[in-house]
Length: 92
Image 1: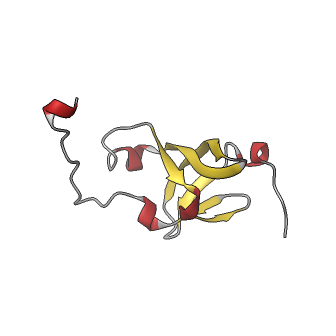
Image 2 (image 1 turned 90 degrees about the horizontal axis):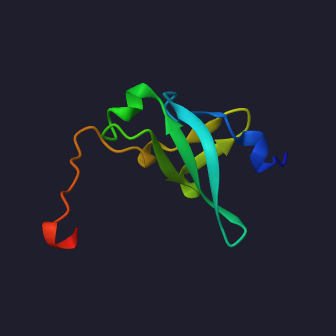
């Protein structure tokens, strides 16, 4: 098994397991000395799916492979026909 440093994977290209380009790794989120998730700067095509956000945090459990590129599970992506729930005004 080849071990990589976190700094070695920053800036890596991220693809879904179906081969679609998703974005680039910006940062690793750590919790108790373990990787909890990855902050990904998304590409323009994915940005429309997530409401125009410039990035997302993908939990580490959705990462399928890390090498020269990242491969993430399609389950990490929002479905095109899903709708965002509105937050009730009394909770804002």
